Length: 480
View 1: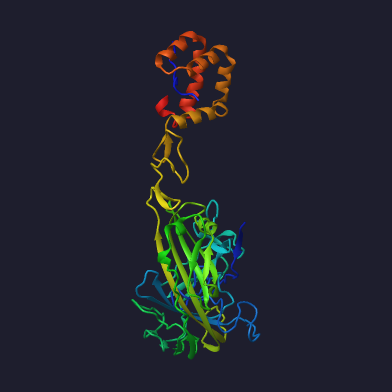
View 2: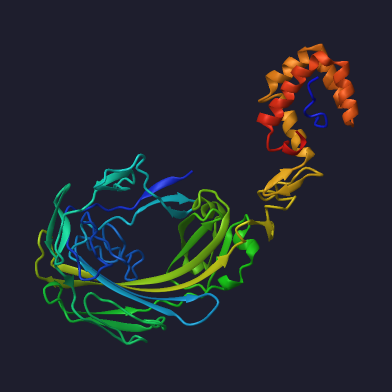
């Protein structure tokens, strides 16, 4: 007689395109980061010119004088300090870069807008690109494959595109402003092309302090000698300190509140997020400095990691001021590049406060107001709020026990094992055997049911095999 197998088991976002076009040719400046060119000849500068302090606006005209914002050479000098929210000294950050014209400055990038914050998009070229191409965005923020500048150039040459998809080499040519001397700054700063800076601590500017940069002028191509004044932005101070934010606010379900001592600069809050699967994302949110606060939407934080669970977070709040000097002149010529005769210089002062929040261990999640081991917590098994049935236990992030087995069995009757159950129910011997077994609590009773309904055993075992071997193998492993 066939054995009974389971006698005990019953039961709206939008993509934002930052304006800008790629040029077919450009020059490499003396600074390897600011104003440098990439393999497609796309130029980029490190300092943004949003929120200029002299009343200018980005785009069509100067909002104060009505002066057209025509193409011009551009110098960007950045003096920054970054400090930890928990206290200590500042780390100085200084850079300088110069470009011969602003006509073909590259876009900032492509972003997705989520609840007023920007999340950097990642290009996806489907099946990939050719070996001599790389995946990037076009001006409409559509993913596209673009030719790599792969011409074999000598050490004193740089690869560029004299024509689309036709890489070539040209001599490296500098475009700079000569030596830069800063007068009236807390740190003595003298920079020479390519404008490398080294500093261990301190701020390169005084908050609300007036200073001057003096440029000796380019030796070959670049800006002629000039002097430009600037005023330092106020130091950023969070209140309450970022370091005092509790875990429930950082890793909870609500918005992340950030507050600071208000002023009149341009404030941007950046959040680097790490998920529990070690993936990461980054978002930025613009804020009104005078308001002194911003609640960072939780949905924007989660969108940065595609809705995953947050395991760690670094929050940085930045205040910047931009002082622009116009009417400067340039000198020299560059191969294949138009050097605009008029130059502007943006002097950017930036103060940043930052703090890193460490999340739960790798096998834990922040549930409610504490870190929970979701591998073995019966009330949060595999995820917050995923409680096991009464009598079951959490093992390795999965509920185990008679309750979860029985629940799976019931579901299978209208699911994967429906045909086997229907066949048993339609047969009087199998349905009789099923009713008999459901009233048993011992092996002897089960065997007697088999003796009473021998012609129903095969159909009954077929239904049980469907449950044990297919539909509910993991859930009912200990009961089959």
